[in-house]
Structure formats: structure tokens, C-alpha cells
Length: 103
Image (cartoon, rainbow, N blue to C red; front, side, top):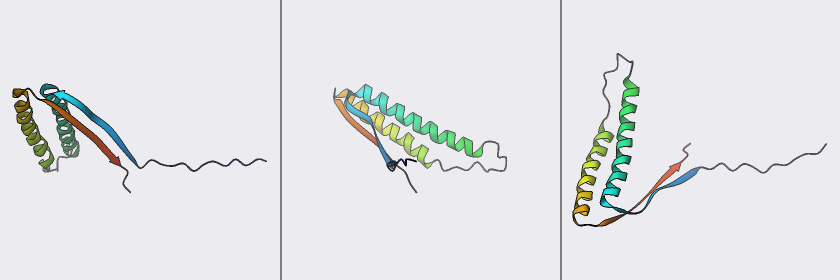
């Protein structure tokens, strides 16, 4: 009988996603950033809803800190992109998402 040896499987423990990398007009940059921020805000709102949905004993208290922070960032970005638009500037943006497996 023949025995087959297999190489050990190496599990990947991290991943980088190059999400944004380029030069954009102020309008394009604003569209990209607003889209990302809206998705994150909606994610947190859905998390809040799913934690309290159907639980009549829940006091519906939820830390809105992250949602408020993201909404504030939207306003800051709006002003920044508006200024760049008025000056006719292009914007270079880079964004990499780093993901790590935690034990």
C-alpha cells in the first residue's frame, strides 16, 4: 500500500484590499467618499435596529457615537471637496483596507 504525503495547508491570516487608488476631480472624490460613508452609516443603523427589534423589554438605548462620528466626517468632507472644487483642484486618494484574523 502506498502512502501519500501532503503539504501542510498554510492559512491566510490577513488580507489587504486596495479600495481606492487614483486621481479624481473633486466631484468624483466626493461621490466615492459619500458612498462609502453612507454604506457605513447604514450598516451601523441596521446593527442598531437588529439589536432591538422584537425585544419589547429593550430600552432602545444604543451608542450612536460611531454614527454621529461618520455623519460629522461627511460634513467635513463636503466642505473639503467644495473648497477643492472652487479652486479647480484634482485630488489624489488612496485607501487600503487591512483585515486580520483575531484569536
